[in-house]
Length: 99
Image (cartoon, rainbow, N blue to C red):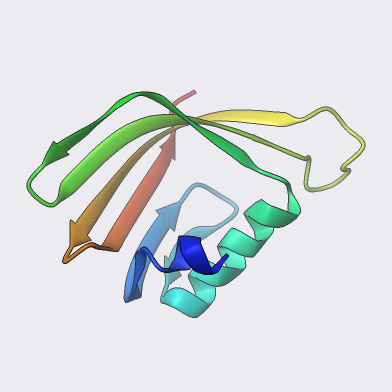
């Protein structure tokens, strides 16, 4: 948890697909990451990241437990993501469904 949060600026803004939406600040982002951990999320990079200045873009596959019933089959989603990284910290992160 702490390792993942160490990459986010204190005032970082994460824009995630529903049901999360706009998440602002490390405390709120911590809650989002805790949800991923609780769902035993596995995030796989698909292809290579592209970097242009402060912008980083990539595609990923996220495999996790179903939020409503963990006994159901795993939920798999594809995301297109981008982040603005300044001074080694994520200041803005956006993810959208690639499906």
